[in-house]
Image (cartoon, rainbow, N blue to C red):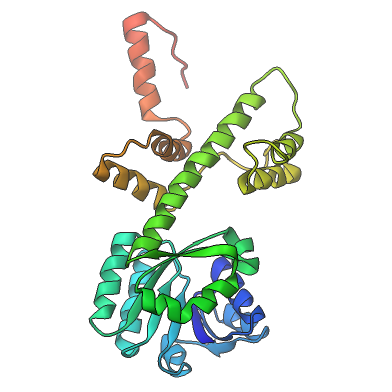
Length: 298
């Protein structure tokens, strides 16, 4: 099939290579001209503006977006909404909030433009060699372009999740689960680090990933990380977050679903951003006031 890829960052570029490997004709656009030139050297068709993207596709057009969630996605979709025609299809493969995806899809539908919200997992390696996709939107439109999703995913690695918004909702919950899994792995290794034993953490991760009940791709990545830096001395323990964990917790609160593991894993990420918290100061001061407990001065 012929389609366009908008956004050639780490995910979009590797996904473009994946599409080209499977024989798809690809029009590629990114704000970085170097990225466009690089992917074109591998067989893509260059576009240096959204207008060029639209002009180089025949109706009904298929446009796959892999751009950062939020205002950038909003801006790109707003522009595309003025350029595309009835029957054209837009896929948002970024980590958009599902509520935004429902609104955007409805706005495009008013113009006769179809919209699929596509949660994308598997990281950069997955985008290149076989991703995991969760796709929401009109079932008829999904069926029409299903061969694209089948080509770029691993076996059983794509799923039509239902109505508009369900793809990004599913990816949001997926990422919330991921927060909890990563936090539990990190806490386990932290306890090992503070023990009386001297463990080879690469070896620990390797044995845990072979035959144990906690084997996983995350444990495989843990092994890889420790193979590069046995004590992780080269990095700081700052855990950034991209939004999906927060949205998962907010949704759990709205639905009155207890989700303590995901919630605490999100809060631990926030805690990692501070070296000396005001919360800690208040608690230390209170313990000193009521019990005369020692405080540590600067």
